[in-house]
Image (cartoon, rainbow, N blue to C red; front, side, top):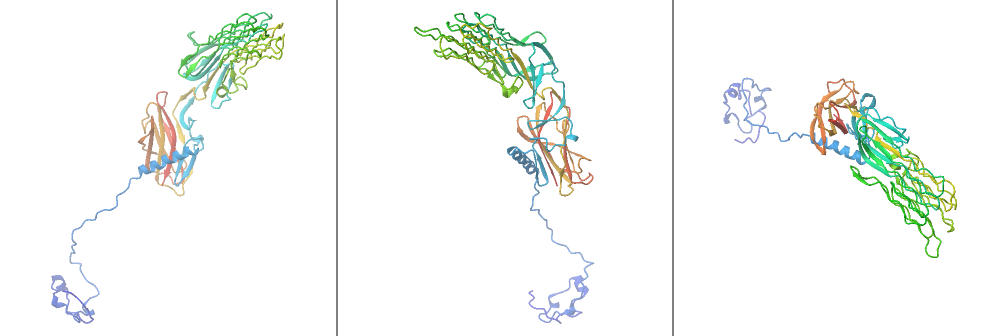
Length: 531
């Protein structure tokens, strides 16, 4: 039935009774059109307390699925690490989050951290050990490294534990020759970028330079060898002394690098320092000396030659001048100012002046090689001490002493961390201020299993504090994947920190345990977030 109109007065008080409602007795006839329902027929209240209203059965389906943001949170941290590296930033803030890439120690509370050692953007637990002893002196001009300078004639070095070092062993340079003499050869040079030392006592001998002669008619003296020997008397390195320069028609001598010939013979010395191959490539350097120049028909060009160096052969005499010594090698970038500012080692000596061709001069060369005589009766310069340079050749008719070779040297460089033992680490951050007291915290950290494999939540643990470190709550780290060889992403999310005393001073703490040479855990970066 359709209702089209309800007017006042259409329903009377007696038209609708509770009995009719209770029994369902209202019929179509009880409702009349137009005037059948009046205001008085409806009471102010409707009492349904004794009846049950039954609705049709139905179900409500959830149309919004809850999203797991764990991966998103981790990826934000990884992007933060990437941008920190890209822009060389150490520590910076995001909204309710801090990123620490360990470019430097800005974000770490050194006062509340222990055994933390930062090197090349990585924290590792380190316990300082004993450094090697017995060197003549040490040099620290290259940041992060120490160089042992073995410049005494002989001695021993006590190495407390195994470590890789960089070795430079240079023999004594040869002595220059007398009358119309050629330059002497440089001492043999051994450079090995990576060499393993073990806990023992090593002995060294630093080769002296070839001695000068008091007479003018003489071949130069050969320099002395430099050696490095382990405790069992096994010689690990021998650098050969440089060859002496030749004079007039007498040939030069062989040596680590060969001596240069005099003016009237093709008698250059040969190199005896053989090149060798090792874990860092080729090591062992020495080159031949050069030949002098005899007088061509109708010419007076009796010129002398240079001795060989660690970097190249000596220079041969020409029709207009005597030869320069062979080049040395520059290790200033590796050993700094350990033996002066030049950083050059093992250059041959230059050929001497010959008086019957006007305008000739003695030649010089970098790396400690002595200049040849610049006057008719003069002697060449001595090779520079502690470089293994060869002595310069004497002039024609020289009556003074000949030139001496430069003494050799042994240098051993190691990273300052090389003799530090691996130990357990506590790495605590500086405080980061939240806008209001957080109730949850997230941590993401990048680690490297440098040795062995760390068991998470046993060998490495993570904590968060909201009250400046007064109280820390440990989170359960989860392995969320790799980011390189032996490198893992560890994280926990939504750690409940509401039980801590209220505060806005956010800190993280990472600890490593059971660390040793066979289990070394490195920490590359950490993100702390809160909500």
